[in-house]
Image (cartoon, rainbow, N blue to C red; front, side, top):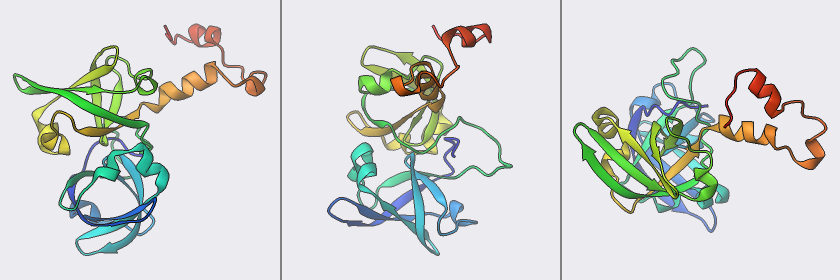
Length: 218
């Protein structure tokens, strides 16, 4: 599990591309302190497993499914990526629950400055937008951000300068693709409220029960 608080920006070194997969070599510094083979690292919001370590970085395999669902397929040597190690049990929870399982990609359609803030408007598919709510959480390239506005086919976030400077958001331009991961709580609530026919008799969680407990699902 991750929090969406990026620890450092790494650099893509070697990329070995297979027919349906790839091996990424990432140059990093800070996150190598206690990193071990087999550990999980969020790379632009995608949970990858460390397969080898060296003094200045690590490698990770990227499988077919991951390439299909994320923007990692567009990475090039010399490009930059957001990096975050898995959250330690005794760590601070500064962002929100991020699994590193990207739901899909969005396209930046507008970037504008508002005094100190920078607004990013991102176009996304309906399957992703259905879980995005104003003032809710969204992970964009692994960065935990708060949704400021939601439109019919897009949503907007407002980022502070510190977040932009210390992540790859500073390099993003109009037309770029970004990885999106919805807040997983909404997906689980929907699943429990609308179980598959074979599961309906097993679930005791109903809208009435949630309403009685003070949950507003309107």
